[in-house]
Length: 394
Image 1 (cartoon, rainbow, N blue to C red):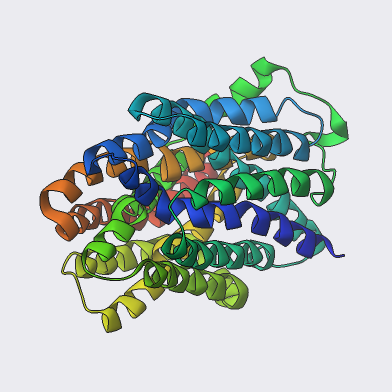
Image 2 (cartoon, rainbow, N blue to C red; image 1 turned 45 degrees about the vertical axis):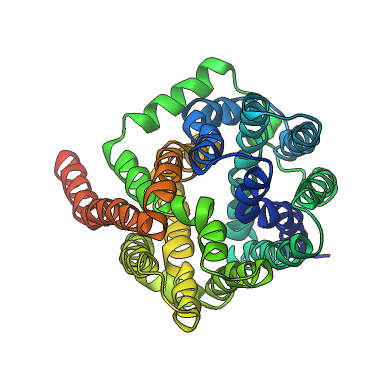
């Protein structure tokens, strides 16, 4: 089995679980009595805490000899936390267990991305192929859970996620290659790992890149947290909600598998700009509660709003960060794009959903616009830095 296929199967095991929990966690919490504001707080908590948990987990993972070992441990922790959700009741236990599960889960993709990006570069395959297999698994999780919840109770979501978290742990151990964290298998001291993290934070161009992409990704907060409830409130059945989510991720898969030459040609900065423009259009239109025929092309914009932004950010992190800080760079990127910024957006989305329903998407349009402005500044800033370095060495 080729390394690209093995990596793809790992991503599939990872995303089949999250494909069920991402759109339907709010449905589960609502079925157990939480208000929109309460759901927003629970869903936002791990994202808000990711400014601490993300770098902490990255530094912890960099202390191992092999990159796959901490990923397997983290997957087992996700399974245990979801078991806990099913055995407890009440806002505070759910808040704590959701915080643990999502803090752990959010680190699995960037840690896997470090392996995949390196292997793609050294062995000559398109990163989008294994990642696209994972996205196909995400579609399967979306659609299957939509129909399962329609046939059974929302509790089926917890069982599904536990099973696939255990599968992801096994996949990490048996499918991921035994790549060392550091050349020669050495372990860097904690002081060295912290030093690399500090250098990244002090780089203004690097920070602008992760803030800009983070804002565009954060504009998905209302969609991730409340699209299922919004569409169900508009009369769409659960199965169709899953299909709509699947359309978005299908567009993501198409982008990952078939747009590689175009993606390389336009460069990461323009990818992020396109993502920002797409988000501005998508959220503004969704705020108007469009008919079903228009929802499908709007969902296809996920190829830009998420995937183009995501791919652009991965390339920017790899380009702007030194190799010794690769894990920290990708995790810092995840901390903002899937962490602090989206946490704030999700928390606000809960109150917006209670107050104005679908019109809450308009706030996401403003967030996307702010990210777009930052993305437009990336190219001139990088040119200015290169010119300054050339002048200093002349």
